[in-house]
Length: 413
Image (tube, rainbow, N blue to C red):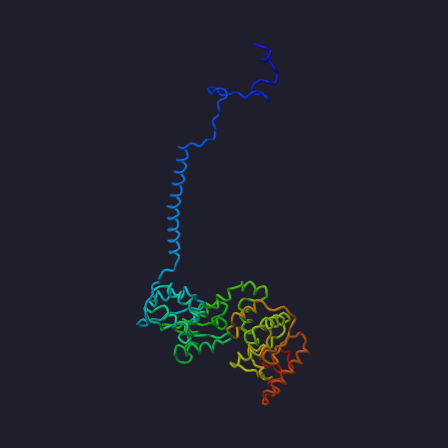
């Protein structure tokens, strides 16, 4: 051992020390490159690449084929459909508010069309069917093409339905049913009286259908009778009055549900247009709150079974519980069958302090809380009436409300 063995800084691995050579390589021999390519490995890598490309081609093709199949399945299939105008005869009823799917199901059920899909596609592709098909009962044939069936349904003349306008009285509805069903005059009214318990009326109506014969279009078939139609109307009215928590709202307004229906019937008879209904409603509620007579000519007209703009002083002395000039509060029953807008006005009256109103001319109804202003409006109404009809007398046209006249000296409404 020499002192050189202990020379600091020359130990193997120390910074500046000679690099240890691996055993088995002669001193000075060239070092092999650690990254020299291996011919065998190159061939193996190329094979893997080719295999991967082959797999991508195979599975990619299968995926493309699958996607194409799925897309093909999304294309509308050919719907079953008959050809031609069909044969035989069958009646199909379309209820109020029925949609295309409901109508299509009824047609399939009655053997009119081959499939619901064929009918709904025909209807959606038809400009004539853009509007709703009218409710009613249609006479069609069996095994009709969807297009042929649609052509019958889009023509309102083919709807064998009974349409009840808003504001009709029970007497008008009874007469319309008699005509539609070709019954002797008075048959429906008699049925309504004798079979009142079968109509489904609420107990508080005491068997009077007035107010509960909801205005709409009803289907009429060969087997339909008067009681059937009245039952449909009462059922529909019950649904309408059950909407919007009408019973709870009525109580909040200090009324029963029947009182609300009665108010809606008077609104229907008094308002000149839909926009004024909420204001007429408010006048009624304001007068009731002050215990003022309603002084509505529509109630007198109901008692007398007439419709007129002329109300005389003598009329206002009529001895009837429907005479709202003599009796404060509501009449004993509704005076007509109100529609949806009138019901909503009764449920949600427009905010205001009005106590009077008068329709000076169509489209010009004036509301006020001042008796003096009301009298001026009434004078203008009378002048307009006299100029339009010189035969009108002062006693017949001295005051007015919502298209119906009232005698001078009264508070008006």
